[in-house]
Length: 121
Image 1: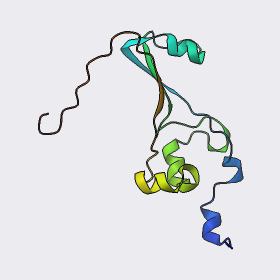
Image 2 (image 1 turned 180 degrees about the vertical axis):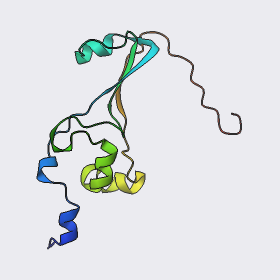
Image 3 (image 1 turned 120 degrees about the vertical axis):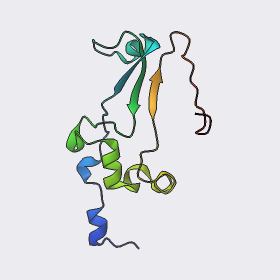
Image 4 (image 1 turned 135 degrees about the horizontal axis):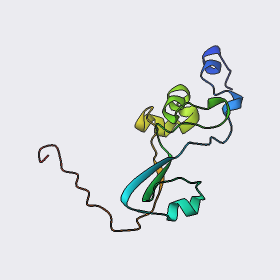
């Protein structure tokens, strides 16, 4: 049987935090982007003409509702750790929020991306 002690209470998410978090998305424009993402998500105008990506969930994503409004996902992860992301992700990635969720519209050919190693760069 687990008993609750003072440190457990201090590190527990408040019951008001146990709600669906609405995140402020990031709009990313690239030359190869289009309008499909804006249409899929029914985004209000204005949005970039070449909307390539929307970042829906990411580390520095601001929360836009409830008691945690204005805090980033990184800040909430720092504060609540395993209660928010689970024990295994916390052990593997630490307090960095381990996901980036996005929608991509590759309307045109993608730009070439090269990721050389440090020696080559």
